[in-house]
Image 1: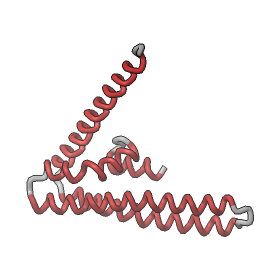
Image 2: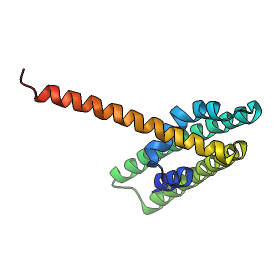
Image 3: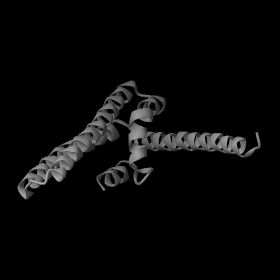
Image 4: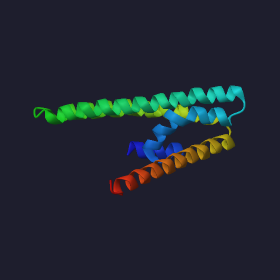
Length: 151
């Protein structure tokens, strides 16, 4: 649920959680470099994109760690409701801070670029993703036809 909300907030529904991570891990810095011509704004935008990337990765790590804590409590039959409440509250507080940091970094990123630049960045990211998907589909089709052909 949290990922869906983040994806909607960051991309207006574009691609979901996978696209969120892919965009900030693999595309943002190069697309910013290509689209933002003013060097000061470009450098600032890249710094903020890196901060968003680190925040998303931190959120993933925290979610994994919190899941492990919950699993441990769940598997321990002597766990009390108070222990569950404490872990849940700690997890929520951690994630709330991290999501707040991500949102603040993203807002700073958006202030560093113009609306037109951001729109071009998103359009180019979608274009790259569509080209990669087409290439993967073509590769899968070739593999399937080879497997279907008699040896």
